Image 1 (cartoon, rainbow, N blue to C red):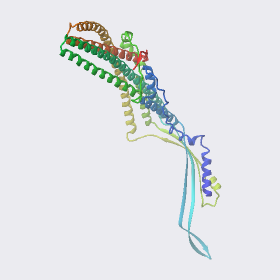
Image 2 (cartoon, rainbow, N blue to C red; image 1 turned 135 degrees about the vertical axis):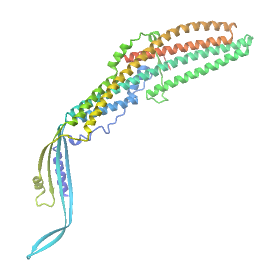
Image 3 (spheres, helix red, strand yellow; image 1 turned 180 degrees about the vertical axis):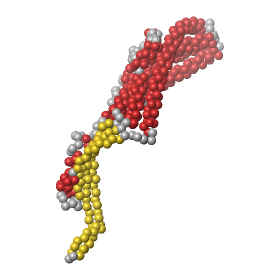
Image 4 (cartoon, rainbow, N blue to C red; image 1 turned 45 degrees about the vertical axis):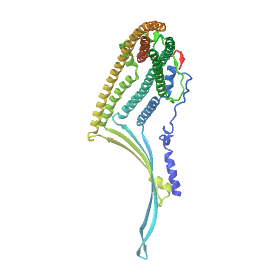
Length: 475
């Protein structure tokens, strides 16, 4: 028991020479620090901006990328820590039993052998330090590479945030389109029901045949089916929005509809060149690709450091004791105390092509990162060009659809008046009514296609998606 107390005392004395907090440095990491995302209040009403703000806090993809960015910060700290020496304490305790140990003695001129069972206890204690003085600047380049990787991870977060903004804007505008489509179908159904009622009066008066009245009833059923389909489409888009917001499918949402006039639909379009020039400078995915090229270039230097020699310093102190000695415990510790210091140099001569292969792979990775950057730029230009063409085409279709709706509305009103007067038959009325419905749907499609692509085009240019926040009503 006395030996155990002495061992504990030695260990504590040696541990006291460590830097403050050194023993705990590796135990106070990030384990146990999993933090749930801050609870975000659910807005009473949802416009485009509130949807985006909520999603930026709650979307799982964004939160996962933020955690990955935090992980790269840890990698930077680890790379910096490699510049400092390492320090470790070691101890070994041994219990040795010799059951048949023989000893001799001279008694009355004769040698007498005696066998005994003897158990001894010994311990060794050491404190060792090691510091890499030089390894071809590998550590410094690794630090720079990890810093770049951390910046890339932050930009990946920004990219995912832009993606969710774009997805929410698309879904939100689809909801606006679907809501207005429901309104058009509701009005169409009301008109069909009124025409059916008027047809019943004409049938009773003998002005139309029963087959004509049957067509009016069939049209009411068709329009009711179209209304149900439009309502289902609206609910589907709302469900998609809830999924982007990480809301439960049963969560009630009051979505406020903005007032969107011709100024939103026919706003001037920036040129493709201006949008691309701004996007190349601002889009995080482009900046991330550029930084990845720099990081892969550093990777070549890190791999080449394997050709260079490395220099390391080592130092240590130690002592020991044994229970079988005639000296006291303190005397043994003092007498066994030893100090050491050493310098080691390692010069690579042949390592089975490992360094050469690492350099070649690093060069290939550099070429890959350059191609990735080029591909990102081409994809960006292709996206911008597509948005511009779609926006320009939708604006032209909208202008034509306005004129078509105006003329179709006038024609339908004339036919409807003539039908009520018994001058037009049911086929002519329903044909003109379907033409009106088609013109209304074409106007809606071109309107919201123009708004969506114009908003996204300006978003790629650096503007915020805040042009759709004026209130009208909720759905």
